[in-house]
Length: 189
Image 1 (cartoon, one colour):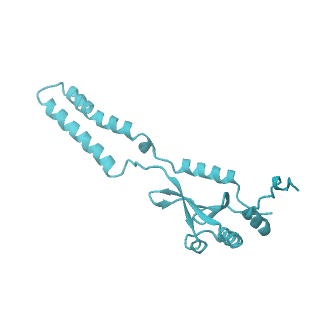
Image 2 (tube, rainbow, N blue to C red):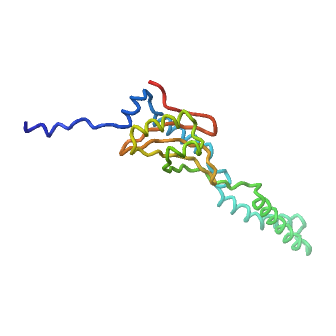
Image 3 (cartoon, one colour):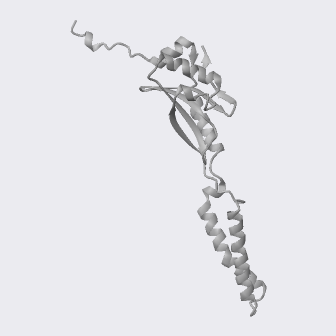
């Protein structure tokens, strides 16, 4: 028939078929997106980091103000200029001590990073057993699928990982956890 070519066969969805065989539903994208946003807000940059330029200008600009105030309190007599310079110097030392010792934390925010991992690495990466088991089972059924580990990182510390399985243009979330606490896993159908 001439029109048979116009009717396309239904596209195979290997990941969804594998999930159906295992009778599980993946973690919803809405759950993952909400979790990622909440964690970025929770582990966001500190007040001092967000406003470091303004704080620096205020702290440095305060040095002559301190000197002027001390000079004014002394009535601008011949000894007040030495006292004003000394008080400005002490102020700068105080600012340097606060920032240099880390009492004022200039902590940058955390960011999400993704990387491909193998099924063999899941135990070493401390992926919870129920998530790793589903990931390995589905990857055996769809061998060309890739496991992608997403991690919330701040200064090289991993705060909050998740696991995604990718196959061609499909992505499914297999779980979210924090340390030993499982936050979301595929649900039985």
